[in-house]
Length: 408
Image 1 (cartoon, one colour):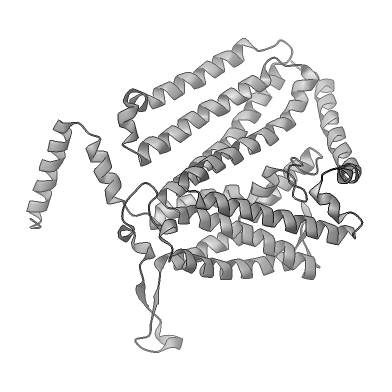
Image 2 (tube, rainbow, N blue to C red; image 1 turned 135 degrees about the vertical axis):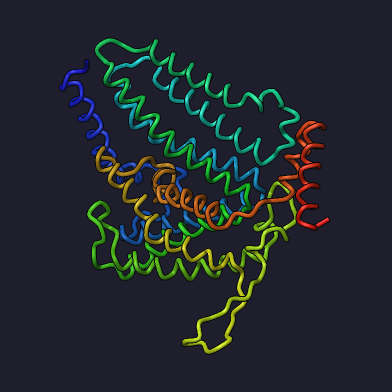
């Protein structure tokens, strides 16, 4: 069992790391500006405006990279999601590594990355075999045994963990194992949902992601110019003015951006095939307006998807920011300023994607609850992956059903 002094030592190490990070950030920035450091061009400005320009410039750079990857296709988006997930996992696990260094635990990092690989194998395999039935023909045995293979790989990791248990450090090792599993749950499960959104149509990936980006930008801009009233103690720089201003602009942006996306086939068609006409969400529909105040018989023609953008925008404005507040509380618990220093003015990947976690989960659940329509092409591909005898059975059943309803 680990002694209280061991825990205090580890906690002290984490606090010292965070305090050191916050105290030396200005000095590190000054040193970097002497070499090739893009943020160095803003040296000498008022700190408030310096941060404004650094955040703004690198925000545009990130948006440009993001747009480029989107235009490269759904497969590129999938790789992007996995890359972001891996980096988020690395940033969170790195905090736990403080205890690894303190106690010299055996092969802790190896087990972390092994479990990440296994869980991704399971998650990506499920999406791949479901959305691309033809792929099963090339990996038939692996596809049929996918869950069993995943389970055996995972249990091998647990066996490996048990064999590396070190006397007097059981509590610490099990705590770190739980840390790893919670991190996997947060990021791999969410990336699984995001990839599902991509395969259901790029619209369902791009819309929620863009809403959070818009809300984050407008909250910063509104708070920068008009912020006076603190919003929450966990994030002292957040203000009610920024929160309310971001809500207003995010809803407006959601309506306009959704209307634009409805006109571009690339965003609304199924990436794995299928004519766009199958999805009625992207076809103009006439809605009857209430008699008051519009008058009797008044109607309006809209894309149903535009209406669905409203609840997405509301969630992105009111609930998704709590993902950021959660991350702020986490950083305060470990006395760190940012999860990493990868992006100047923004911090690490987790610092940029903390709000996307809740938003991605909500967008996926909302879509599958209220919006999803079966893709006939996917059904046909699934039938074609059956054996000849099974296809004949499906044909007979379908013929009986159509005949009984007088359709043939």
